Image 1: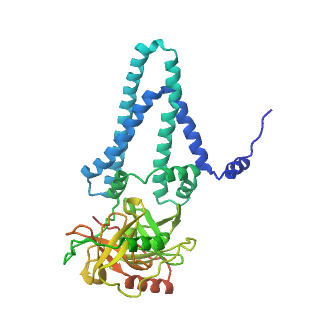
Image 2: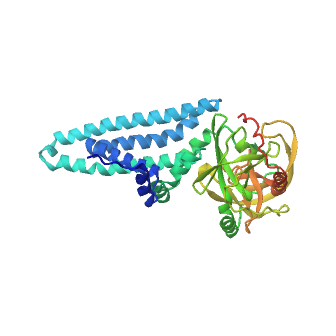
Amino acid sequence: MAIAVNSAQVHTSWSMFGLNWVDLFIVLFLAAVIAKGLRIGVLSQLFFITGFFVSLFVCGWIFPHIIRFHDPTLRTTVNASLVLLTSLYAAMRGYDLGQKVHWSFRLGKLRKNQNFETAETALGVLPSLVAGLAFVWLAGVAIGRLPFVGLSNSVSDARIVQGLTNLLPSVPAVFAEFNRQIDPNAQPTLPAQPKPQASFNYDPESVQSANAKAAASIVRITSFSCGGIVAGSGFAIAPGLIATDAHVIAGSRRPIIKYNGKSYEGTPVYFDATLDLAVLKEQDLKVPSLHLAPKNIARNTTVAALGYPGGNYQARPGIVRDTRAITGANIYSLGNFSRGVYLVQAHVEYGNSGGPIVTQDGTAAGIIFSKATDVDNTAYALTSIHISDALHHVKKSSTRVSTGACMVN
């Protein structure tokens, strides 16, 4: 007699354990991986896994450095394809080598041991499970960072993905480097004149305090635009309003705000290519707002540069060395405009764009928008006065605005 199973009942049973459809898919995937591992044995798996992941890490670091096309779409496609294909080729060669080692054992002295084949088959479960979980971890992190709302949220909500993310370290630096290479809207750079002093004696307690009070207000911004994946940082300046850099969302039709494992589609309501400043609106996003400094802060004040360099949240120490008005072009290298900025001695990189510099009491003094071209560990931050003006403008008119054209690197 056939037994009918209601799909809603199955969904409810999984939901009772806090699991979603992604968890179910992962369980089925791991079961298939383990079944395959039982058939091919432990040695072949170990060589296969080693070949794939070693090649993935090595090629993921090397290829973006040596393969540089001007067209961002072509650059992204070629690099990603070559890394994947090379890793798969290395995995297959590893599998072949594992098979040879496997048969050399079976045809050697161990052939007389009847328990050898049984033991090798049983041990095949472990590398299969480890490889499967490693793949789930990398895929979960990658999908969770992509500019999707529904899929990213489902993956981030999966209990298995959450467990792996909490247990395992942050995304490897090689993937952050690869991600940086495919961003078509690179962080602008400016010369630092005069150069700041070499000493870097910041107050660690001030940095820790700033991070503790402001970390909950920092978000990650990401989108598909201009032939690549654009990513940066942002922070809440009012309920439902996120400040970021204009170059982070330039040319983007659907900028995505990522916060606490959730994705939200932000609506651009302010975009100034001259200041390199933008504001996104998302009423469903519940992020505590940072207080904006009402005036410029003093020189040699210790600050924390908060954001997502390489996609991972970090609080980096900094010192405000100077406040000045600089004259320069907009994000498209056009025109000649003036703006008030801080010269900040801090190590910033890809992903810090749009993140705030925060003082000890948790006040946002400015927003990082550029690195210095002629001196290490020096950045530019737009002062909070400009951010306050943008907030005042948005409160009067919060309709969608254009995010301009793509930047040309």
